[in-house]
Length: 204
Image (tube, rainbow, N blue to C red; front, side, top):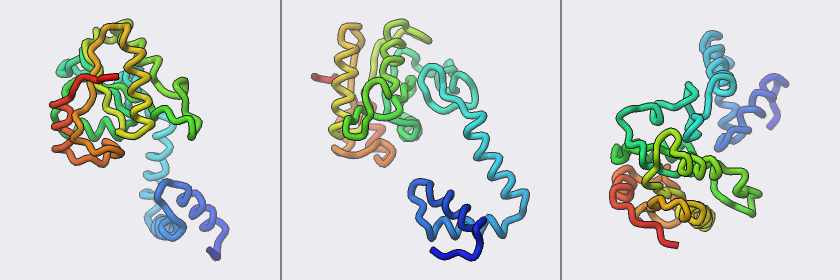
């Protein structure tokens, strides 16, 4: 793509590095920002910078938060004895949108995938086991495994279940209303909500 400006070219290069943004879309965004009012562009750049400088991961569940402990973990209205284990932050949002779950979460930050170089130590599995062992911030009675129904998700499920088994905690998984191979963030809210409400014991 031949552009008349080095500055414009650099902006397009940075924008096209975002997931799902091709060169043509990046150019459209860059030209929009070029013609936008300076305060609007400044507000956007400052908002993006705050993502890196002010956004936290909750000390308990690893969800994104403006504070050290996220609103879900700190809420007195949540069932603190149930933990729903999910792959990423988007999955927390997907489950919350069902309005069928009132427990806490634990975000792993991925699933075990040797092909992609992601092992147990790269995920927040040890901190999950620690939460169950110590009962911090509250004693845990049930762990819901809500990971993708893929080979990597199932591998991660089995590993976590094996680690939790000696601790005597109840381990369940979503009912198979979620299609095999689907990510939670793409499941419709009714199907996902029913899968949570009708969760079943996890069997190894």
